[in-house]
Length: 315
Ligand code: 8YV
Image 1 (cartoon, rainbow, N blue to C red):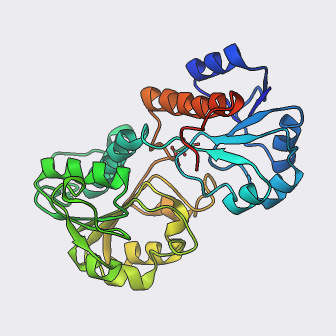
Image 2: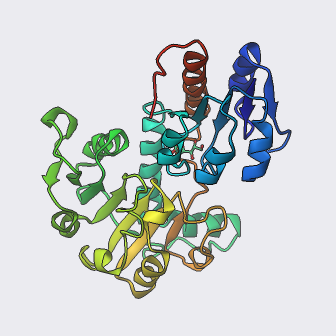
């Protein structure tokens, strides 16, 4: 028996149904901890998603029969990993298969924020586009600028690789320097403070952890060049919303491109009112190919656990 907290792509549900008796809801609404526990009551495994409250209270109440929690994500910040370990539950995630889709969305944010795509699209849609004029919606040039990457894991590397096509000078911070073949020509900075002055554009690719939560605050933003652009495809809570909004209003930052938000989908409402934000509803991994691959990877983790094999993507 497999408990699934959210509806999954058709091909993934089909494969899951071939091997398991499924416990899942009809709709797509996020479930509460108690509702998820209820789905899990006769399950041997659970497939959960970002936003599900897989916390210490969840593990304390979860029947031991549910041996594995496989998350449909690479991020695990919605899971209390220490509580999982203490209670003897195995956790699996889906790294690798969403790297390119997420790097592509980071680039959509870079370009969309720099080129004022939201304002432009609104004019066309609302029929407020009055004329072609030389000063109409002038944005920021991307090609040839400096790009800074915080967190040079798989996704950070894929973003750096794409930046070469834009003739950018790429800089990165990571806890450790990478071998040269994984740097894609990017220059390493051993501290974030060293990196920030080199970022006309800054793209976040670190996990949400106690060290990174609220990291992008007033002090952090002050060290960026004036007029910089920040994009976030990582996690919303890495950013201090109040400080980011103040910098977008004052002109310290030209624009921000955001795919993730603290408290999403209930985001800080001021973002919607700012002309210089380019906003997406957490679409980083949202391609048919990637979401199918993520689902299959989550099922691979579950199948391996149930068969007594090593879980291939064990956290
Ligand atoms: C989606 C993600 O949120 O993998 C992650 O960590 O944030 C995204 O891929 C995820 O697919 C939803 O569960």
